[in-house]
Amino acid sequence: MVKKCICASSVTVKRGKVLVLWHKKLGIWLYPGGHVDEGEMPHEAAVRETMEETGFRVDLLNPDKGERLQRDRVAYEMPRPFMILYEHVPYKTGRHDHFDMVYLAKIRGRQRFKTEGARLRWVSRSEIEHLKTYENVKWVLKKALA
Image 1 (cartoon, rainbow, N blue to C red):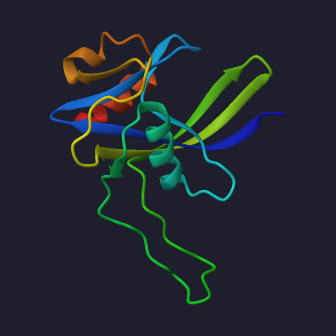
Image 2 (cartoon, one colour):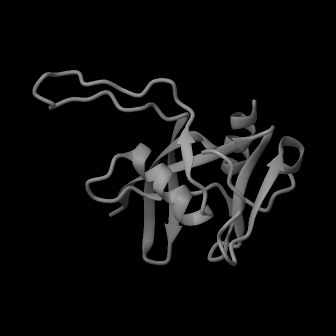
Image 3 (tube, rainbow, N blue to C red):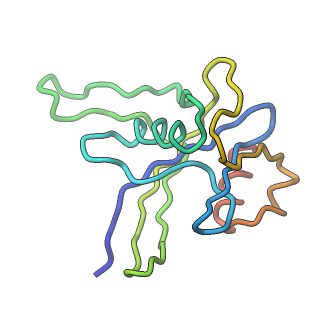
């Protein structure tokens, strides 16, 4: 049986470049993201994962903040992601399918790289094609800069 997971990611954009981090386990460059924790909303997970993996506090670039749709708080419109990806992720224990909510983000205020030992870089559109990463990651990064 294939495990299905809800994930959230952020593509942080700054001055025509996007932030990527080196994923030691996979040996590739990725944008920050991960599984949505219990009791957490996807947009909250995207902000948390970015902070945990890069040390940056970010704001999501989404003018639509969502609204309550019913008085009894049963339904809410959530902030819309930049895109939603359905990804087949191979693990040693079997395949996981990720429903990945990808948000655009910007760094909050003035911050510098803070995480010790983390490999982070800003890449331009022309550098994306040469990144050691998955083709779908390159596609997302290029689309974010378009």
